Length: 71
Image 1 (cartoon, rainbow, N blue to C red):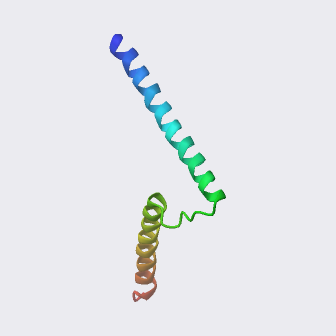
Image 2: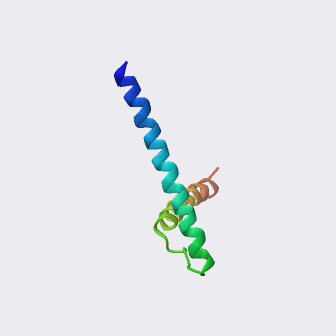
């Protein structure tokens, strides 16, 4: 019983922490964008864009294999 209460509290604290981090990041970014700071090479976006690029490249290669294979 006591363990369950601690798990609920731990979960609530974790959710609150994630919420605060995201809100603070959004606030930080909006303030920086007002003074024309570029976020083009920001770590989060670079990682996200690289993952999308890799997936897109892989998808294009698979499509080319399908279209070039003899039918």
